[in-house]
Image (cartoon, rainbow, N blue to C red; front, side):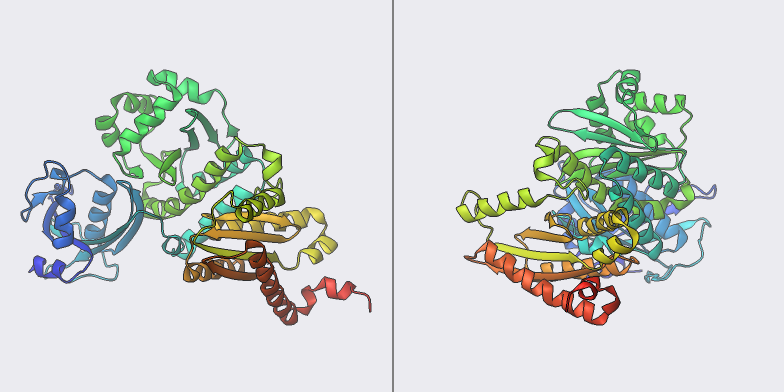
Length: 476
């Protein structure tokens, strides 16, 4: 098979990797059989990188356990796979395609082949400095449902610790793990906390760190070292931990832990915590990884926001119910933009999302039900616009400011919001947007967004007159 000709067809990074399935069922070390020009450039940036030749061991360049696991799994199970990870300081999108004996790409999952042989996998990848939220939303129905449940758990209560405990409990069930916890890390203060499904365990960080002869923050640094520039470790056994951190390995064995998941949680490349699970269901490894790729992204914004607002006067800037920025914060932001205290972004997207049907819920089911609807709406807004500024302007109105966004991206974010809302039984939005460039007046833009939202709302109530309690209550 002409593997070099195969990889040369791609205009993105591509390579063919091979390993031997041995008679005892074990696998040999992975070898690089062919790379295209872009891949060659990537490998040669490493210090003391060996000159490439077909069959050079992958570990001569670097060790990345997750990459190796995907290559092994794809080639042995004849299964195309994809991943989206934060590793080596980049967001890496990878596609793993098994090859048959003639070098043809297998595009549909076949029967696993564990007979002694040489197995081949084509790995193609793109890299970016920033996460692509569009790609992260493209998951199977099962994974999307799991992520939605976790997202709702994160926002069902305004109490950060209770929300995290509920989310950890959901993640624990998804992983089939005996133990699961969140280890938050505030780099600025070097403070750490430990939250499991029962809530915050105040004494645990100190007790656990003391067992290792470390401080709680040193535990976080050691875990960073164990990851070796990757975003996660999802291990069937502890052999990798034994090599990378023997002290931690001994602690894990002492507590009867046989396998482990360690996922770094980062916000804008800054570490804010770790997700940790032990004695998990190894048969669900790929589904777990796909779920946690997006879940840790959601957790990062919630944790980072909590760490940020904890340094401010909480009640003056944050809406207590939804945990979004409040009207005071929005007014201050607008005043700063108008006065010139804050420089106007060259591009700005403004969206006004109004929650449809809140009044009818308040009237028929009570304000507690209405509050829960508002919290679910806030959860979806965070999922669709988590990288931007979301304000609860009052009642059922939410303004979103999106600095430095393109008009196309703004449209796509709104489309995602509609799609997310349509996947729920009761959350529906009317949305008005405007995209700004050059010199602009932010207050005038907000007014335009309001007018466009109102037209969208009119159309919604025209199609759903039974939802318009305001019209029903309007005097003649």
